[in-house]
Length: 353
Image (cartoon, rainbow, N blue to C red; front, side, top):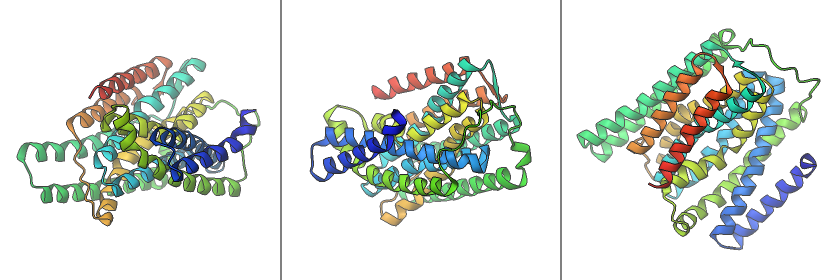
């Protein structure tokens, strides 16, 4: 029933979001309809990438899911930068990183762990992911410490941000070459999978690609409408920009990864779920955040790569526990619960900022 109603609901929520935006129905209704519409659009995005994953394989499929899932995050961030809302951009990037490492990975490990006693994935991949996560932390921590303690000028801060951003992108491109080409075999998941019992992809390869493009375009429009409501919405309900960016925008923007990773974990495809959750966080830290620095230059609104101590602490804590749990190449429901508890602790703390 829900599958039959999905496309009508997708069209209806998109239409309501458009009407509420252009007819100015008020910030609360505009935010509610945009949030609901982006969930359905992200659902289409997730389903299309899962279908593509059937043809492309687990690792590439997980990468595509993370990439197109982050499309919503990137598009929302671009519109926020255009409006000069840099604090919300950085908070949403923080939320995306901790959300994927704690909420998505935690929910996947918990759901899969309740069905299977232990879920294993490639240890070498887990080790490389841990190293890359630590690189991301170093790249964010070091400039922030120097800028805050040495009182570096705004111009030099921007120069540091551009240099760090360039090298982070270089590191990410290097990782793609390493993982997809030169050492692809070492990172393949050879763990026995739960059979799909003849399960076929939702659509053909061509139709899946078309739906990917359609969903991305829809997310782009809805994201712009959502951004215009944030100032009024947060002020109306007394929410800080930090909480709105780190939790509200991040959860809505990453809806595609949430659903896809959990569904894969339930099929004992934990390697693909980890690729989505951890891979998405790495993509945000090593590619999306640095790219946004360069995009901000195009708008004439320069956004640096200096995060607040609270944001850095949240990212650092998330990386620490996610690395500790995933480095051995196996997860259980108990470890998933631990990740979710840390996410709740951070959420409560951010709320009262």
